[in-house]
Structure formats: structure tokens, C-alpha cells
Length: 94
Image 1: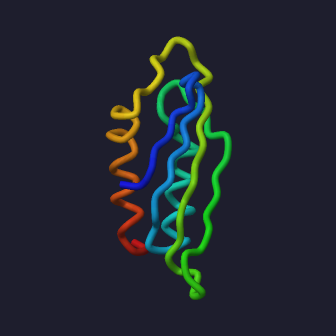
Image 2: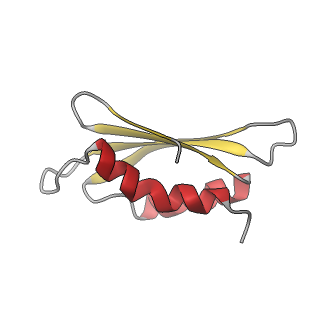
């Protein structure tokens, strides 16, 4: 798993992890944009290449807490929730 940071107020989560291909990264970002964690909304996303070939890349996704009816994530809860997406990003296109 990559890196998960929650700001001191708990209202913003930043998630970073590597992806095998940029196609896979964008597919995951689209899925998270359509179905973000409960109580959160995607604020932004970025895919940056790791090598000259541009195939392997790093993903950074930021979420804002917007629904007070849902509980804010702790770091452990966020790590568990985003784990499946990080594992999927490690796989190639498909």
C-alpha cells in the first residue's frame, strides 16, 4: 500500500500509491470519482509517470469530508478501505 494522510482537522484525505499502467490508474480514479468513500467527495486526482516509458506511474487522489451524517475515517480505516484499490493498481490492464 502507498501512503495515506489525513489532515489534522480530519476533513481531507490524501491517498498515494503506485500503478502498473496509466490506463489502470485512470480506471481506478474514475471508479472512485463515481463511488467515493461514504461521506467524502473527490477533490482532485493526479497521475504522474515514474519512468521515461510512462507506463508505470504514481497516483495521488484527494478527498474532502462533506457529509456529517457519516463518520470521518481514521488512518487505519482509510488504509483498509483503499487497500483493494492499491492492489488492483498493481495489476496490469485488464
